[in-house]
Image (cartoon, rainbow, N blue to C red; front, side):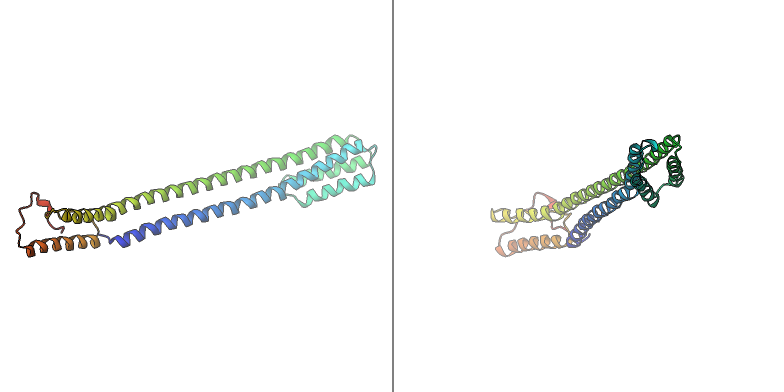
Length: 237
């Protein structure tokens, strides 16, 4: 039978280990969520903002009739930012279409306006779809991490119950038995003895010693003990 000290240390060590794992799991979950948010901001939001700026320039230029150098510079600046922030494989080809379409507008080809607007809108759509995909991945990651923490918490709860039950059976109940024998002796019952077979070795030794002391008291008191009414009141072996 495992000594009670070792058993309690083992149970407490498992509980502490589960608590430490829960802490690291929570830290890992939060540390992985922050880069996902940064990725959305850096990779997709920047391209969407640049595309929206290009649409604003196209609206202000009214198809080339009131364009100015400032508007051209603003458009190509936004286009350059979008090129520097390419994250999806379809973006380079779309940006080339935007570039060619705006150059056509500069040359007076008004029919290029619709193609340029369509290309910019497609650029926005692609980056919005990528943002949704990244958001969904982050959501799945957070849900998986939350369930992992819940499962570890349930495991800790289960281990805690097991440890509590073992303490009750191997420590509290044996001590109650010892206390009951002592109280019975003080109340004048000379026959009660410790009867607890699931006690750990240390407590069994205490019970056996207490029974021996009570038997010794009988032998030195000059009174012969009456036959015990139950055979299971012998010393625990």
